[in-house]
Length: 223
Image 1 (cartoon, rainbow, N blue to C red):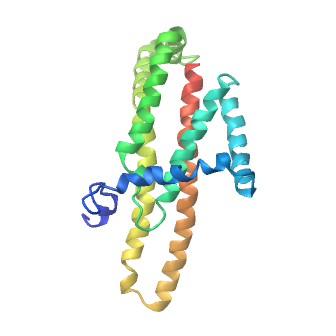
Image 2: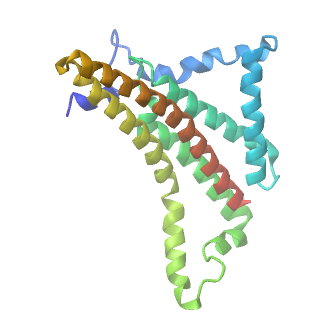
Image 3: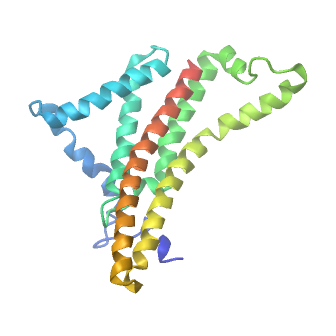
């Protein structure tokens, strides 16, 4: 089991230099070229989903603070690119560690909570008691809503990290058994691996989308 989980070990080094975390910014070094190159099919293909996300996030935000949607689009892009990068061989899975996912979730959640309680205090108190709650259950609902608000950054972080770890572990377990298979079984296993790789690519995009949408919903509650 130690060898199995060693693919998620962040302490490995190359030439005494810890290069694992460099994968987070490798893609970001290539992205700025799209801002000064001429329009092409690649930029058009990337602009269309950004416009769709921009309209969707604005709807979730009730068309308030439209500039905030760009922040969540950037968050989605960062998570999605890091998830997709981790599907390549010998590339460190950055988003499988709470040190990365919690760093993304905790500051945003804490900022929203501070803003909400300082600016919209009455509105934040209203969220602690859902509409139609019986008077007898109000103290319990306040406790439940408070706990649910506090654990939000942890649930965001664990959801993203657990989904990335689960898919990579399944592919690793299947890959480790390849040496003991016959040729016919090996061909079936390769087809399964290809299907799993396609599934992981979809999960990489979906998890970034879920993370950004949930943060947008938390922001709309504060506003």
